[in-house]
Amino acid sequence: MSFYMKLRKIPSKRKPLYFRGTSKTLKRPKRTPNIRCQRCNCTECRNGPLEFPTIWEDLRVNNQLCDGIVKCEDGVVFNIHRIILTAISPYFRALFTNSINRGRPEINEANVSVSSSAFQVVLDYAYTGKCVINNANVFEVLKYCDQYEILDVVQKCIQFLIDDLSIANCLQVLNFANRFFCRYLIYQGNKYVLQHFVNVFRSNDDFCRLSPQHLKEILSDDYLNVKSEEIVFEAIKCWMNYLPITRKPHLFSLLKCVRMGNLSSEKVLKIARWPIIESDTECTLYISDVKLILDEFCDGVPQNIYLTRPRIPYDILFAIGGWSAGSPTNFMEIYDNRANKWLVSKDTDEVARAYHGICSYEGKVYLVGGFDGNEYFNTVRCFDPLVHKWTDCACMYYSRCYVSVVLCMNKIYALGGYNGRIRMNSAERFDPVRNQWELLPSMQKQRSDASAAMFNDKVYIVGGFNGQEVMNSAEMFDPSTNQWSFITSMNSARSGVSLINYHNALYAIGGFNGYTRLNTTEKFIPDHTSRWIEVSDMMTPRSNFGTVILDDNIYVIGGFNGATTINYMEYYDIEVDEWVEAASMNLNRSALSACVISGLSNSKDYSFLDRSQQRPNEESKAEI
Image (cartoon, rainbow, N blue to C red; front, side, top):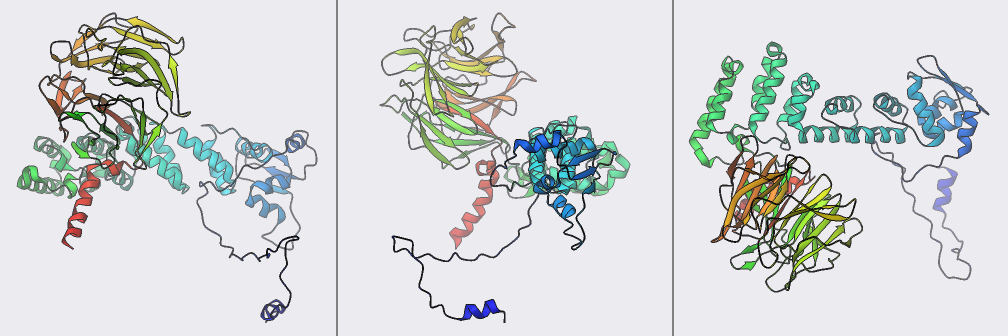
C-alpha cells in the first residue's frame, strides 16, 4: 500500500478551516474521473475564442526568433515558431516535443504531405486566428486539418461547405464527407440532397455515378422531397440508362423504392411497359403483385404498408382562424401535400379571430390583427412550430381587421383595414428581431379587405373597400424612398381578393366586385406590362380565402362563395393554365389566413405519416 493510501486511512485530527470573519466551512471539492470521449472532428468543441497576440504575426513576418521549419510536398519551406504550431495542433506538439519517442532530443524540422498554399492557410490561422477558406482550397485544407487535429479550421471548412452547398456540388461534398467520416457534414449534405432531389438528379452530373446502395438509401427515405412517385421512377431510369447492362442487377431493389400505391393504375402500367422492366422477370412479377394488391383494396389500401406510405412533406401549409357557423374560430388545420390530406392540429391558439393577416418569417407564423365578433385587435401572436408554442409579440399602433399583411425585406407590413369605426389608409411595419412596430406614410387610398404582396423588394396592394365602394385601384410602396405611388388599376373591382407573387408576376384572384363573388384571375408584371391580363378562372367563385404557393402552384383555400362558407381547395398549374381540385379542409370557413413554412426539422410532427403511425399505438393502448 502506498504512503498516500496509508495516510487516507488515518482519521484526521485537524479542525476544519474557516473563512476569516465567517463561520463557513471550506469543503474539499469532489474528485471527478478524467473521462476522454471520442468525438467527430467536425463537431465544435471550444468553449470560447482563442486569443492571438499581434506580436506573433510580427515575428513571423520579420522571420524573428524562428526555431523550426516545415517542408511542404511541393518543396516550399516555411520558417515557424514551434510553440505556435504546438498550441493549435496535438500532432505538431507530439512531433516537435518527440513525446512519441521519449528520451530522444526534440526536433525542429517537419515534413508534411500538403501543398504550400494549403499549409499557408494553417499558418495564417496559427498566427492570427483568421484564414481564408474558398472553393479552391477547402477540400485540401479540411483533409489535412482533420489529420493534424486543427479543429477550429476544420469547423470553418465544414461551415463553408454547408453554406456553399448547391445543386452542382452537393454530391461531391457528400462523397468527400463520407470518405473522411464528417458526420455533421454528411447529415447536412444528405438533408440538402433530399430537399432538392429533383434538381439534383436532373442537373448534377455526379448523380449517375452514385453507388447503388447510396441511391437506394436516398430513394427509400421518407423525407425525399418529390411531388409524385413518378419522379422517383424517373430518377431510377436516369441512373440505369447511364450503364444499363452493368446496372441491370440492381433494378429490382431500386424499383421497390417506388411507392406505387400512391400512383394511379395508368401510371403503374406505364412503369411496367418500360423495356428494361419488361425484359426482367423478377420486376414484371413484382409489378403484377402490386397491381393485385391495389385492385384488391381499391381505394381502401392501408396507409401503413410501404406501397402507400406517403413521404414526409418539406413544405407545411397552415390554415388558421376564420369565420365559421356564424362566429370566429381558432381552428388550425395542416395540409400534407404528399398525402393530399388535411389534419386537425392540437396547437390551436386560445384566441379565436377572423379577418386577420398572416405571415411566416424564420420558420415562425405571425398572426396580425383580426376580429373576434366583439373586439378589433391590434395584437400579434407568434406560433413556433418547432416547439408547438404560441407567444405574444408587440402590439400594433392601431387595431385592424380586414388587414393586408405581407413580408418584405424581413419586415412585416400591416396595411389599411377597419378599426370598428373607419376604413383606414394608415400603414405600419414590424421588425421581428427587435419586436417593434414603426409607422409608415399612409397609403393613397383607404382600403379594408384588400390584399398585398411583395415583388422585387417593393410592397404592392390592390382592391379593397373604402366604406363606399369596392375598388380596382392598386398602389406600390418603395421602402428605399418611403413613398406610395399608384400603379395600373385591375380590370375588375375586388374586395376580399388575394394578391400573390407567382412566377415573376402578381396574380389577383377572386374577391367580391360589389355584386357577386368572382372566380376570375388576372396578372400583372410590374415594369414590364402596362395592363392586367386575364388568366384561367377558378373552379369555384370565392372571397376572403387563404392563398399560398405550394409545390410551385397557387393554392386557394376556403372562403365565401356568396351563399355559404366553403372548405374547398384548388390549385393553379401554370404549365397547363388550369385550376385543379385538391383535398377539402375539415371545416367550412372564410376570413381565414394561410401560410407555408418550409424545411422544418420536425416536419414529421405535421405529417399524415406521423398520424397514421400513432393510430395503431393509440388503438393498442385502448385495448389494454
